[in-house]
Image (tube, rainbow, N blue to C red):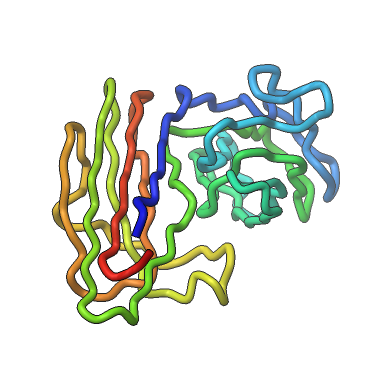
Length: 211
């Protein structure tokens, strides 16, 4: 097959880049006030898709937040996050834009919304029915970044956008320099996860036996 290429470069984490500290007297939408990321249309532009993080010094553990937005392909996605007690929690899905954040109850303590250092690429489906199953993986690193190749056996077509059960590749976990590895047992898909850093990581995927 022709190589499938995933290129990842995340901006530095911005804890309140989507919404500054605020409370709600009843269920409703947070105001997207993060000047660093929110454009004139009120849409948070995160660049490369990544996790959305909520942080509060108070106890908002009874509140469920729903994040609306899009991924790198422009597909509309939503994810729910249960509030926290004096800490931070992030979405499982990865967003390129955030258009709305809804709370299902009053928010009695300040909560801010932004980004952390984590983000995963789009899912790359593989043909798990080819025999033999051979996939080559190549990572090129520029600058300072830590990445992991993850794989899943879940049905990534029937259960879009997930979340799915992602497992780190044992030979491509916390990669900080150029590296390569393979899959020799069938998996349904893989992706590239950025763990930290603002450098650039490129994942090239080549599966034998396909065009």
